[in-house]
Amino acid sequence: MSSDLTPVANPRPRVGLLGTGPWAHRTHAPALAAHAGSEFAGVWGRRPDAAAELAREYGVKVYEDPDALFADCDAVAFALPPDVQAPLAVRAAAAGCHLLLDKPVATTVEDARAVADAAVRHGVASVVFLTLRFAEPTAGWVDEQAGRAGWFTAAAHWLGAVFPPDGTPSAYADSPWRKEKGGLWDVGPHALSVLIPILGEVTAVRAARGPSDVVQLALRHSSGAASTAVLSLGAPRAAAGVGLELRGTEGVHALPGWSDVPGAYGRALDALLAAARTGVPDPCGAEFGARLTEILAEAEAQLPI
Image (tube, rainbow, N blue to C red; front, side, top):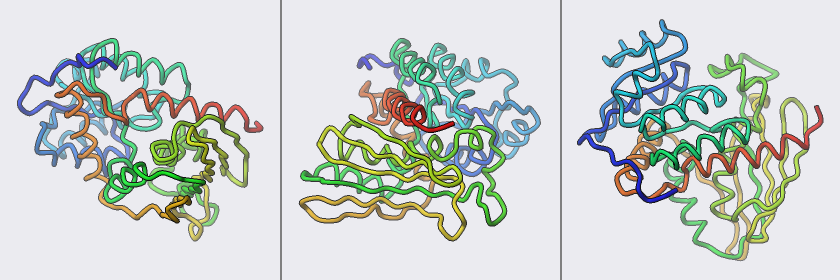
Protein backbone atom coordinates (compact mmCIF):
# COMPACT_ATOMS: atom_id res chain seq x y z
CA MET A 1 0.00 0.00 0.00
CA SER A 2 1.21 3.51 -0.75
CA SER A 3 1.82 5.95 2.06
CA ASP A 4 -0.70 8.55 0.77
CA LEU A 5 -3.72 7.20 2.61
CA THR A 6 -6.80 9.38 2.87
CA PRO A 7 -6.50 11.21 6.24
CA VAL A 8 -9.24 11.03 8.82
CA ALA A 9 -10.57 14.60 8.77
CA ASN A 10 -12.76 14.82 11.87
CA PRO A 11 -11.27 15.22 15.37
CA ARG A 12 -13.39 12.21 16.33
CA PRO A 13 -13.82 10.10 13.21
CA ARG A 14 -17.31 8.76 12.56
CA VAL A 15 -17.49 4.97 12.39
CA GLY A 16 -20.44 3.04 11.01
CA LEU A 17 -21.27 -0.60 11.67
CA LEU A 18 -22.51 -3.07 9.08
CA GLY A 19 -24.12 -6.17 10.59
CA THR A 20 -26.53 -7.07 13.38
CA GLY A 21 -25.68 -10.64 14.41
CA PRO A 22 -24.26 -12.00 17.69
CA TRP A 23 -20.77 -10.63 17.02
CA ALA A 24 -22.20 -7.18 16.35
CA HIS A 25 -24.18 -7.27 19.61
CA ARG A 26 -21.44 -8.75 21.81
CA THR A 27 -18.27 -7.22 20.39
CA HIS A 28 -18.53 -4.64 17.62
CA ALA A 29 -21.26 -2.33 18.91
CA PRO A 30 -20.09 -2.24 22.56
CA ALA A 31 -16.51 -1.56 21.48
CA LEU A 32 -17.53 1.19 19.04
CA ALA A 33 -19.77 2.83 21.65
CA ALA A 34 -16.99 2.74 24.27
CA HIS A 35 -14.20 3.97 22.00
CA ALA A 36 -13.01 7.39 23.17
CA GLY A 37 -11.24 8.31 19.95
CA SER A 38 -14.16 7.97 17.55
CA GLU A 39 -17.91 8.48 17.26
CA PHE A 40 -20.26 5.52 16.74
CA ALA A 41 -22.30 6.98 13.87
CA GLY A 42 -24.87 4.36 12.90
CA VAL A 43 -25.86 0.86 11.88
CA TRP A 44 -26.90 -0.86 8.67
CA GLY A 45 -28.01 -4.47 8.45
CA ARG A 46 -29.58 -6.88 6.00
CA ARG A 47 -32.47 -7.24 8.46
CA PRO A 48 -33.94 -3.74 8.91
CA ASP A 49 -35.76 -4.62 12.16
CA ALA A 50 -32.55 -5.95 13.72
CA ALA A 51 -30.62 -2.89 12.56
CA ALA A 52 -33.23 -0.58 14.05
CA GLU A 53 -33.14 -2.46 17.36
CA LEU A 54 -29.34 -2.28 17.61
CA ALA A 55 -29.31 1.39 16.65
CA ARG A 56 -31.91 2.19 19.33
CA GLU A 57 -29.87 0.37 21.95
CA TYR A 58 -26.90 2.66 21.33
CA GLY A 59 -28.76 5.82 20.36
CA VAL A 60 -27.31 5.99 16.87
CA LYS A 61 -28.78 6.39 13.41
CA VAL A 62 -30.17 3.39 11.52
CA TYR A 63 -29.42 3.34 7.81
CA GLU A 64 -31.58 1.70 5.16
CA ASP A 65 -28.84 1.97 2.53
CA PRO A 66 -25.17 1.05 3.12
CA ASP A 67 -24.02 3.69 0.64
CA ALA A 68 -25.73 6.37 2.74
CA LEU A 69 -23.80 5.10 5.77
CA PHE A 70 -20.55 5.23 3.78
CA ALA A 71 -21.29 8.83 2.80
CA ASP A 72 -21.70 9.84 6.47
CA CYS A 73 -18.70 7.97 7.89
CA ASP A 74 -14.91 8.15 7.93
CA ALA A 75 -14.54 4.42 8.64
CA VAL A 76 -16.76 1.36 8.62
CA ALA A 77 -16.69 -1.78 10.77
CA PHE A 78 -17.92 -5.08 9.35
CA ALA A 79 -19.81 -7.79 11.24
CA LEU A 80 -21.03 -9.69 8.16
CA PRO A 81 -20.43 -13.07 6.51
CA PRO A 82 -17.21 -12.92 4.50
CA ASP A 83 -18.74 -13.10 1.06
CA VAL A 84 -21.24 -10.37 1.96
CA GLN A 85 -18.46 -8.29 3.51
CA ALA A 86 -16.10 -8.34 0.52
CA PRO A 87 -18.19 -6.52 -2.13
CA LEU A 88 -19.45 -4.01 0.44
CA ALA A 89 -15.87 -3.33 1.53
CA VAL A 90 -14.94 -2.54 -2.07
CA ARG A 91 -17.86 -0.07 -2.22
CA ALA A 92 -16.89 1.46 1.13
CA ALA A 93 -13.30 1.96 -0.01
CA ALA A 94 -14.52 3.64 -3.19
CA ALA A 95 -16.52 6.02 -0.97
CA GLY A 96 -13.33 6.90 0.93
CA CYS A 97 -14.04 4.91 4.11
CA HIS A 98 -11.31 3.19 6.07
CA LEU A 99 -12.02 -0.51 6.61
CA LEU A 100 -12.20 -2.44 9.88
CA LEU A 101 -12.76 -5.92 8.46
CA ASP A 102 -13.73 -9.24 9.99
CA LYS A 103 -11.94 -12.48 9.18
CA PRO A 104 -11.82 -14.09 6.75
CA VAL A 105 -11.94 -11.11 4.42
CA ALA A 106 -13.57 -13.42 1.85
CA THR A 107 -13.65 -17.14 1.04
CA THR A 108 -12.41 -16.73 -2.53
CA VAL A 109 -9.02 -15.39 -3.52
CA GLU A 110 -10.61 -13.18 -6.17
CA ASP A 111 -12.90 -11.43 -3.68
CA ALA A 112 -10.21 -11.04 -1.02
CA ARG A 113 -7.79 -9.63 -3.55
CA ALA A 114 -10.47 -7.19 -4.74
CA VAL A 115 -10.76 -5.78 -1.21
CA ALA A 116 -7.00 -5.38 -0.81
CA ASP A 117 -6.69 -3.79 -4.24
CA ALA A 118 -9.59 -1.39 -3.54
CA ALA A 119 -7.93 -0.19 -0.34
CA VAL A 120 -4.75 0.62 -2.27
CA ARG A 121 -6.55 2.16 -5.24
CA HIS A 122 -8.66 4.50 -3.10
CA GLY A 123 -5.97 5.27 -0.51
CA VAL A 124 -7.84 4.02 2.56
CA ALA A 125 -6.47 2.23 5.59
CA SER A 126 -7.54 -1.28 6.54
CA VAL A 127 -7.29 -3.63 9.50
CA VAL A 128 -8.58 -7.20 9.77
CA PHE A 129 -9.75 -7.99 13.30
CA LEU A 130 -7.65 -11.04 14.13
CA THR A 131 -8.38 -11.42 17.83
CA LEU A 132 -5.02 -12.76 18.99
CA ARG A 133 -3.17 -9.89 17.33
CA PHE A 134 -5.09 -7.27 19.32
CA ALA A 135 -6.05 -9.00 22.58
CA GLU A 136 -3.74 -8.83 25.57
CA PRO A 137 -1.53 -10.48 26.59
CA THR A 138 -1.50 -12.43 23.31
CA ALA A 139 -0.59 -9.45 21.10
CA GLY A 140 2.48 -8.66 23.18
CA TRP A 141 3.40 -12.36 23.32
CA VAL A 142 3.33 -12.62 19.51
CA ASP A 143 5.63 -9.60 19.19
CA GLU A 144 8.00 -11.07 21.77
CA GLN A 145 8.22 -14.46 20.04
CA ALA A 146 8.64 -12.85 16.62
CA GLY A 147 11.79 -11.22 18.02
CA ARG A 148 13.31 -14.59 18.93
CA ALA A 149 15.34 -16.76 16.55
CA GLY A 150 15.84 -20.50 16.23
CA TRP A 151 12.25 -21.72 16.10
CA PHE A 152 12.05 -25.38 15.09
CA THR A 153 8.35 -26.20 15.11
CA ALA A 154 4.95 -25.11 16.39
CA ALA A 155 1.65 -26.86 17.08
CA ALA A 156 -1.65 -24.98 17.21
CA HIS A 157 -5.20 -26.10 17.86
CA TRP A 158 -8.44 -24.15 17.84
CA LEU A 159 -11.29 -26.50 18.66
CA GLY A 160 -14.59 -24.69 18.95
CA ALA A 161 -17.89 -26.16 20.16
CA VAL A 162 -20.09 -24.02 17.91
CA PHE A 163 -21.70 -27.18 16.52
CA PRO A 164 -20.97 -29.72 19.27
CA PRO A 165 -22.10 -33.35 18.86
CA ASP A 166 -23.03 -33.53 22.54
CA GLY A 167 -24.96 -30.41 23.45
CA THR A 168 -26.73 -27.23 22.46
CA PRO A 169 -25.10 -25.23 19.65
CA SER A 170 -23.54 -21.91 20.57
CA ALA A 171 -25.00 -18.47 19.91
CA TYR A 172 -22.93 -18.36 16.72
CA ALA A 173 -24.38 -21.56 15.28
CA ASP A 174 -27.10 -19.80 13.30
CA SER A 175 -24.55 -18.93 10.64
CA PRO A 176 -24.90 -20.59 7.22
CA TRP A 177 -21.39 -19.72 6.12
CA ARG A 178 -19.87 -21.29 9.26
CA LYS A 179 -21.90 -24.44 8.72
CA GLU A 180 -20.70 -24.63 5.13
CA LYS A 181 -17.04 -23.66 5.56
CA GLY A 182 -16.28 -25.00 9.06
CA GLY A 183 -13.32 -24.37 11.30
CA LEU A 184 -10.79 -24.09 8.48
CA TRP A 185 -12.23 -20.74 7.43
CA ASP A 186 -13.61 -19.46 10.73
CA VAL A 187 -10.73 -20.14 13.12
CA GLY A 188 -7.95 -20.94 10.65
CA PRO A 189 -7.21 -17.21 10.19
CA HIS A 190 -6.58 -16.88 13.93
CA ALA A 191 -4.00 -19.69 13.98
CA LEU A 192 -2.26 -18.41 10.85
CA SER A 193 -2.22 -14.85 12.18
CA VAL A 194 0.07 -16.02 15.00
CA LEU A 195 2.17 -18.60 13.15
CA ILE A 196 3.12 -16.37 10.22
CA PRO A 197 4.61 -13.35 12.07
CA ILE A 198 6.66 -15.67 14.28
CA LEU A 199 7.77 -18.41 11.84
CA GLY A 200 7.58 -16.54 8.55
CA GLU A 201 5.55 -16.75 5.38
CA VAL A 202 3.87 -20.05 4.55
CA THR A 203 5.80 -21.65 1.69
CA ALA A 204 3.96 -25.01 1.57
CA VAL A 205 0.67 -26.31 2.94
CA ARG A 206 -0.88 -29.76 3.19
CA ALA A 207 -4.40 -30.38 4.48
CA ALA A 208 -6.26 -33.47 5.71
CA ARG A 209 -9.75 -34.08 7.06
CA GLY A 210 -10.62 -35.57 10.42
CA PRO A 211 -13.95 -36.24 12.14
CA SER A 212 -16.77 -33.71 11.91
CA ASP A 213 -15.35 -30.56 10.30
CA VAL A 214 -11.82 -31.11 11.63
CA VAL A 215 -9.05 -30.02 9.28
CA GLN A 216 -5.38 -30.55 10.06
CA LEU A 217 -2.84 -28.31 8.35
CA ALA A 218 0.85 -29.09 7.96
CA LEU A 219 2.78 -25.94 7.08
CA ARG A 220 6.32 -25.06 6.07
CA HIS A 221 7.53 -21.53 6.71
CA SER A 222 10.14 -19.27 5.14
CA SER A 223 12.28 -19.57 8.30
CA GLY A 224 12.55 -23.32 7.67
CA ALA A 225 10.33 -24.14 10.64
CA ALA A 226 7.39 -26.52 10.36
CA SER A 227 4.02 -26.10 12.06
CA THR A 228 0.69 -27.84 12.40
CA ALA A 229 -2.79 -26.52 13.10
CA VAL A 230 -5.88 -28.56 14.00
CA LEU A 231 -9.08 -26.60 13.40
CA SER A 232 -12.74 -27.32 14.14
CA LEU A 233 -16.08 -25.80 15.09
CA GLY A 234 -17.61 -29.20 15.84
CA ALA A 235 -15.59 -30.37 18.84
CA PRO A 236 -17.25 -32.08 21.83
CA ARG A 237 -17.72 -29.56 24.62
CA ALA A 238 -15.22 -31.27 26.90
CA ALA A 239 -12.61 -31.24 24.12
CA ALA A 240 -12.98 -27.59 23.11
CA GLY A 241 -10.12 -25.19 23.61
CA VAL A 242 -7.38 -23.10 22.05
CA GLY A 243 -3.64 -23.53 22.31
CA LEU A 244 -0.38 -22.88 20.50
CA GLU A 245 3.07 -24.09 21.50
CA LEU A 246 6.39 -23.03 19.99
CA ARG A 247 9.58 -25.08 20.30
CA GLY A 248 13.08 -23.95 19.37
CA THR A 249 16.59 -23.23 20.56
CA GLU A 250 15.23 -20.87 23.25
CA GLY A 251 12.92 -23.51 24.68
CA VAL A 252 9.18 -24.06 24.73
CA HIS A 253 6.78 -21.11 24.77
CA ALA A 254 2.98 -21.40 25.00
CA LEU A 255 0.36 -18.89 23.94
CA PRO A 256 -1.14 -17.21 27.03
CA GLY A 257 -4.85 -16.97 27.68
CA TRP A 258 -6.81 -13.83 26.88
CA SER A 259 -10.16 -12.18 27.52
CA ASP A 260 -11.95 -8.86 26.90
CA VAL A 261 -12.67 -9.29 23.20
CA PRO A 262 -14.48 -5.90 22.97
CA GLY A 263 -11.31 -4.32 24.36
CA ALA A 264 -9.29 -6.05 21.68
CA TYR A 265 -11.70 -4.73 19.07
CA GLY A 266 -11.15 -1.23 20.40
CA ARG A 267 -7.39 -1.69 19.94
CA ALA A 268 -8.01 -2.85 16.37
CA LEU A 269 -9.91 0.40 15.77
CA ASP A 270 -6.98 2.28 17.32
CA ALA A 271 -4.69 0.55 14.83
CA LEU A 272 -6.97 1.47 11.92
CA LEU A 273 -7.11 5.13 12.90
CA ALA A 274 -3.32 5.19 13.39
CA ALA A 275 -2.80 3.76 9.90
CA ALA A 276 -5.19 6.34 8.47
CA ARG A 277 -3.47 9.17 10.33
CA THR A 278 0.14 8.19 9.58
CA GLY A 279 -0.19 6.53 6.19
CA VAL A 280 1.73 3.51 7.48
CA PRO A 281 -0.16 0.28 6.64
CA ASP A 282 -0.98 -2.01 9.55
CA PRO A 283 0.53 -5.53 9.47
CA CYS A 284 -3.01 -6.92 9.82
CA GLY A 285 -4.37 -4.96 6.87
CA ALA A 286 -6.41 -6.19 3.92
CA GLU A 287 -3.26 -7.37 2.12
CA PHE A 288 -2.54 -9.78 4.97
CA GLY A 289 -6.20 -10.80 4.96
CA ALA A 290 -5.95 -11.62 1.26
CA ARG A 291 -2.85 -13.74 1.88
CA LEU A 292 -4.70 -15.70 4.57
CA THR A 293 -7.50 -16.39 2.10
CA GLU A 294 -4.94 -17.65 -0.44
CA ILE A 295 -3.52 -20.13 2.09
CA LEU A 296 -6.93 -21.34 3.24
CA ALA A 297 -8.16 -21.73 -0.35
CA GLU A 298 -5.08 -23.80 -1.20
CA ALA A 299 -5.73 -26.00 1.83
CA GLU A 300 -9.42 -26.39 1.01
CA ALA A 301 -8.63 -27.46 -2.56
CA GLN A 302 -6.71 -30.46 -1.16
CA LEU A 303 -9.61 -31.75 0.93
CA PRO A 304 -11.88 -34.55 -0.33
CA ILE A 305 -15.40 -33.47 -1.13
